[in-house]
Structure formats: C-alpha cells, structure tokens
Image (cartoon, rainbow, N blue to C red; front, side, top):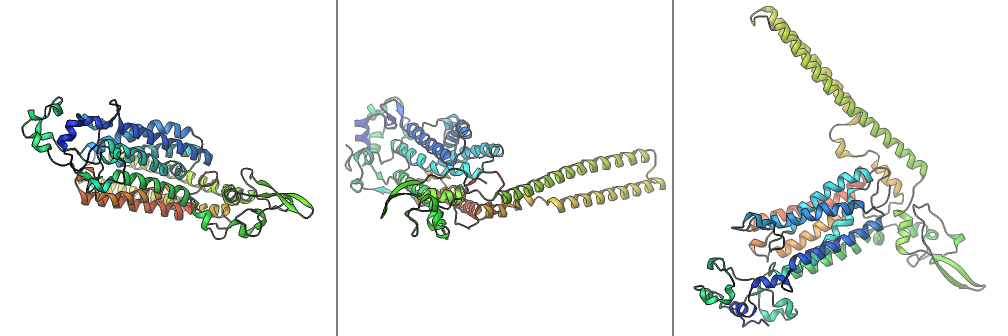
Amino acid sequence: MLGTSKTYLEWFQQNGDPSGERVFFGVIPAYPVFMFIGVAVTIIIAAIRFKQKGVPLRELELAIFITIPLGILGASIFGKAFIPHMVWYKAFFFWEPGMSLFGCLLLGMSSGFGWFYIRSKKTQISMWVYADCIIPHILIGQAIGRWGNLFNHEILGDPIAYEQLSWLPEVIKNKLFYFPNLTDFNLVGDWWNNIDSFSGLRDFLNKPIQYHQPIFLYESIANLGLWLVIVFGVDNLGRIFSKPKPWDLQPKAYPGWYNSQCKSLQEKDLIDVQTQLPIRYKNIKIKTESGESLELKLGFFQAWNKAYYWYVPDSVQSKDIEDRETEWRNSVDQGLKKLNKIKVDHKIKIKKTNENYKNKMRSLDKNNPKYQQLLNEKKTNIESELNKYWNQKQEIKNVIGTWSRKIKGNPLSRELATLHNPNKYFVIYSGVLTGCYVVGYLLIRIILETQRRPEELFIQNSLVVDFIILSLILVGGIIIILLAQFVAPYRYREVHWLYEKSY
C-alpha cells in the first residue's frame, strides 16, 4: 500500500498503467458507473415524489430521454472545452475526466424547463411543482456521482500529509493524489514498463507523492446533508412553525398526540372538514368506567392534509372566482384579438394611402403646386390615421393592460390564495425547495471552491470570474425563494391548477 515514503516512480512500477485506476475490473470506467447510479437514484426519488403529489409520471418518463442525454453532453462539453490542446471531438467523451456539474445543470435543466413548461399548459400543473419533485433530489445524484472523482484522481483540495488522512480507509486515502503531468515526455506504448527509455522521466517521477484533501468527499457528504435539510426540514417548516396551528383553532377536528386538548375523540364528536381525498384516521381503544370505547386520532401529516393540503373551500366562492377569472381571461383574449386586428387594418390603410397618393402624384412635377397640395394632404391623412390608431390601441390597453400585465399576473390570484388558506397558516409554497437547492449547493460550492485547482473551477483558470458567476447564481437562488414564497402565490395562481395543493 502507498505511504508517505512512496514515490510516483514506485507507484508506476507497482501499478503500471495509470488508466487502470479509472476502471472497475479492468473493463468498466468507474466515473460513468457512479454517474449512472446517481441519475437512477435521482429518477427513482423523483418518481416517488410525483406519486406522493399525485402528479402523472408520463411527463417525467419522457423528460428522462430529453434531459439526461443533454445533461451528460453539457457536462462533458463544458468541462473539457477549455482544456488546453484538447482535440475537439474528445469534448464528447463523457467517460473521461473533465465533467462539469454546471454544464450538466445548464443544458439538462434548460431542456427540462422547456419540456415541463410546455407540458404544464396541458396538465395544469405548476412548473414549481415539477421543479420541487425533481431538482432537490439531484443532490443525491451529485453525492453519488462525486465518488467517480476518486477513481479519476480529481476534485482534490489543499496538500495534506498522508498521516493526517488516517481517519479514511486505505482504499480511499491511497487515491488522494494527482498524477504528475507527463505531456512533455511524449510517452508512447506501455511506457511504465520502460521508464528508463525516456530521458529524465525516472528523476521526474522519483519524488514523494503529494496527497490532498478529499474535497469531492466533503462535497458528497455536504450534498447529502443539504438534501436531508431541504426534504425533511425546509419542506416541513410550515407544519412545525405555523401560527396558528389547525388544532389550536378547531381542537375537535384534529385529535392526535400534537393536540394538547384532544388526543383522541369518538366519531360523533369529530368535526368534519371537506377534503379532496378521504382522511385516514387511526382507531384506538380507550378504557372507561363503563368498559372500552372506540375512538379516533389523526396522524400529524394527515392533520395538515385535512387542514390545508387537501382542504376544499366553499364551492360557491370557488365558482365565483372561477367565473370572474374566466371573464377576465376572455376580456384579455378579445382585447388582444382586437389589438391585432387594428394593427393589421392600420398597416393596410397606411399602405393604401401611400399607394393612392403615389398614383396621384406620379405624373406631377415636384415644383407643381398641385404636387405640394397632395403631399400635405397625404401627410394630414396619415397623421389622422396614426392618431386614430393610437387612440384605439390605448382604449384596448386601458382595459386589458399593457405588457406589464404578465408581470402583474392574475388579478384574482390573491383572493384565490386566501380562499384556499382562510386561516392564514404559514405554508412553504411550491418552488421554495428548488430555490433552497440553488442557494444551498452554491454555498457548498463557494466554500470548497477555494481549494480547487484552477483547471477544476467552474470557470476554469479564472478565480475572480468564477466567484462572480457563482455569486450571481447564488443571488438567483435567493430570488427564486422570495418569488416562490412571497410573490407567485398572490400574483400567478389560477383556478384548477396544482401547486403545493390543488386549486
């Protein structure tokens, strides 16, 4: 086994071909294996979340064939594009070292966004729902995929003495070094068996192996920890910290261990609430002076389903908002059609006016008073038509709004959100988990980025630009959280769509 006294020369003499470090059983490249396992686990967890949310799997199944190939392609191209003297076609060799996570996310998530955005119009399932079902679980795939870096001898940190790695098993710590750069020696064939055939190679390799911090391992552990925080922590913040809580308002509607007033109730005493799905109660036997009685209690998550996630508001109020939303949308659609029509009519009128006066003025000399009269008349008519067009256009925009109506969103969205959450529970809205993924992972990446080699940075060989870009992405994640939690629920929600609950 390797130790601090071992040299690179001894390593090559004992192990031979360094490319053997990258494969399992001398055949299968290790990096793609870990990538495949990571992707597979991410898909499985995402499918489970789809099922839990009641989201059809069809869109996910088709997305797999779009996002994964493009994600792998993006990772390989972005990771190898800036390597000096790289032969262009090797940028597609995803089984070789030099894969960029951000390249994967850029191409994979962009294609996924496009696919799910198009499908969301058909399924009436918010993009935020799809995102929350998939994106946070990429952390598990990243945590698994990082182990491929161990076999590629990459993503290592600051130099460290071998003895300081004693907390790691030998199979890991003996791989925590970079192979020396041997490109200047023009090596060919099984050169490791003929080291003395290359001038200066023996002296170059005859120096102690320099070990490094396993930042790939730190990132793997941090990714797993972040996933646990997001899925089991952030997702349940509302359930834990909401003021008020459902059982504080209606103790007899939510009997359970969390309810200080009613741990269990007889069915006749239970207050019912209209829900989209049947609420599952647990039957328990209670001993009384007259014998045993059967009572019901409700699990913590079932209580929140009854209170908010499966809660169905008053049908009359829902229908009223739906009718007004339909009326508003019809008004906007009709306005846009009118706007388009007057644009077309305006162009036709201007064209006809120009052609009409062109024919009248063709035979006249420019110095002819009649020519000047027609020219002024043409100008007056065109100005009159323009004023008429702008007035008509403004009248329509006063009704349907300008381009800013897309930013303003649905004018009934706040009323709709209040209808579905009349008790004003603190809820983590859909989209927040996605933003937490971006913020959390960027913090991990920025912290560990300081130990990476220049060629292993997100923006290779440019630390300042690298940190600027990472910081901008981090800010983008914060913006996603703020928009998803404080803006989208009150501006962009629509009747009959699925968000963290069905509307």
